[in-house]
Amino acid sequence: MKLLRSIVAKQSCLSKKTAFLTSSSGLCNDQRCHYSGSVRNAPEENVMNIFDRNAKRIQKERAAMDPDVAVYDYLKEEVGFRLSERILDIKRKFGKVVDLGCGRGYVSRHILSSSVEELVMCDLSPTHLKQATGPEEAVKCQRLVVDEENLPFEPNSIDMFVSNLSLHWVNDLPGTFAQINRCLKNDGCFLASVFGGDTLFELRCSLQMAELERQGGLAAHISPFAEVRDIGGLLQRAQFTMLTIDTDEIVINYPSMFEVMWDLKGMGESNAARNRKLSLPRETLMAAAAIYETIYGNNNGRDGTRAVPASFQVYYLLGWKPDPSQPKPKARGTGQVSLKDIHKLDEIMKKHGEIEIGDGGKEK
Image 1 (spheres, rainbow, N blue to C red):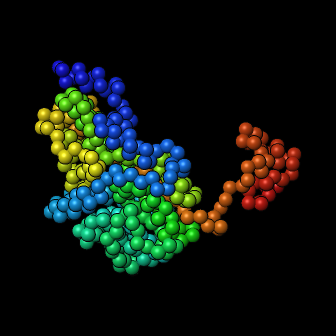
Image 2 (image 1 turned 30 degrees about the horizontal axis):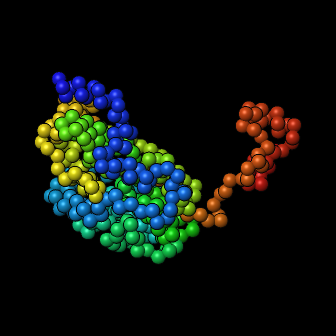
Image 3 (image 1 turned 60 degrees about the horizontal axis):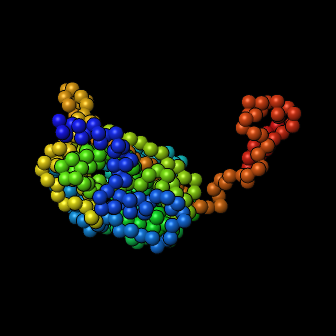
């Protein structure tokens, strides 16, 4: 009863957002400073090492060496397929394309010669890179071990960068965006998917409630994710134009919280924050699993059994390096018809004879 009373009392005050922001060590608040606020006014050298990149490399290597590594590909395969469809939506054939953080080839396996001439597959993990499925044979392909924070490509040498669920582990995200922009040719394209701020909010809240209940404090167990408004600001700061950001949510049901954590480990997505807590007491884990099932549990499991959902919010980003050939908005104040009078467009045209509709064109 004590645990259930605590759940009810704390559920009202710990929303998805506050659970993400709160940390006894101040980690989440500092992490948020790296991505949030007026990012365009932040100093260029303001880099915070939130993540342990070497630990992340080791985690990915261990995941890649698991004999059952393919079992845990389901999420990244699905997002990679959706991202590859966006490449096909662009009616252009790209010369040299970089798949940054390719993993086991979640995007590259869907690349067609009708869209790409040459593909460079890059990943932090050498084992993942060896296991990655390449594009069809007509596409030239090479593989490089690359850290997303230090790109080895020459300026103005790449036609397109693609990244699938990899950039959320980068410490200097503004710097990586700037490097990508610098390496792109004019009118080059940057297409990526990243986890959003509401990813795994169920697991985050359950762990924090259990720690408050059992240990009287809490620590960060889920790595921080950028919000969509911050991503847009960072892309603009890196001089990308014609930005498009859309959001998707994938909800997967698991038998319990422990299967969620096991699959995250199998994906190589374990926490890699520098001040992460390396262990949790058994009683705290059991309490977290009970809270998870009590608050978020459903009957959507196999054959109608009880299950717990895990939400993955995914942002799809599209930006272009500036080029004089790109369409540009007309100057403010040049409009001749107010939107509030758009229903009177026929009357206005009869009265004025012709109006300018953009790019110097005339409507008669």
